[in-house]
Length: 462
Image 1 (spheres, rainbow, N blue to C red):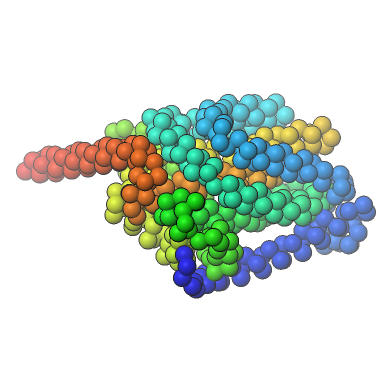
Image 2 (spheres, rainbow, N blue to C red; image 1 turned 180 degrees about the horizontal axis):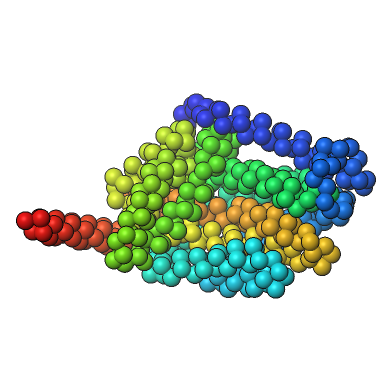
């Protein structure tokens, strides 16, 4: 941590900064064009071919996004405030109530004759239900890890303040983003044109939110690992400016790596969770198992270069993103800790909480929009949901950072975890032993099955 560091992934840092500046300009133009006056900047002459709706004003829709920002911020701050006392209860509620909430929204969409959204939410409810059923036996260990992660970050109030500060930064960017999005919703373009513009703006908001969340991830991970190495935040050997040093690295030399990893990591992780859940419940259907195994190995290859454990390596060593991801994954695999990572569902549980927070935010804005303009309610509701997910995700990433740091510390030196919590160390070691035995028995079963198939094939050919 004390060594001088080189800048990495500078190309992606440049792309992100240019994207941010360019998009900020576009958002300002889109919002100003209909602020207090229709077609103030005379942009409609470029879109007259697509005019299908009566134009509105930016200030008609901007308050709806203000509601989304307020609800999302309240949920995120409440999560951080309740982290020490009610975090486990809140995570359990998120896991079990999300399926019901998705199903209810699906029914309401069908009632409102929004069949596309009804089908989308119904599929989401079905996938959520199947995933929870497939990993129900893993939830006790997952909750144990999350409890210890909460305990770890709760004893570091300085990282909580960092999360609050970054949430305010996200909120400021969302004020500008929602100004432009409100201008798009208020435009006279047809539904197709407005949806395409909102999709482009949403992708940009997702990347920006992911970059800020992962910046917090790097700061928290660096602080947690440093405290673990020195034996506690009160240790005399720990540098006095360690948090500021972590913030400095995250916002300068390592920021390009964070921008690069934020583009792909979330999508690959989500796909991996779903494939693992499906794979564990296929049974003996060899055709389907073969197809899923192909996708599984493809995603596992991608995980080698894009995984959340890279952010811990970035925080500690200041490497490039791909180098950090590869080193982290090789470390986890060489020590066998990867079997614990595969068994643990903490990332999925935190994602469920993030989605649940986003759904509540989107519902609040969407219902208000439905009362006033039912033809634009789903545009506002869906984009508000994304805003809520990012704001709640900023709170969730504090716990996720602690989880990734626990696994990297355990793989680097198990004594770090033993010195911090001996009982938890014993539980992790016992679970690791059980998972390694399970994987070994599965490998023997596959080998025996293949040998039997080979003998049957030889006899048939004879």
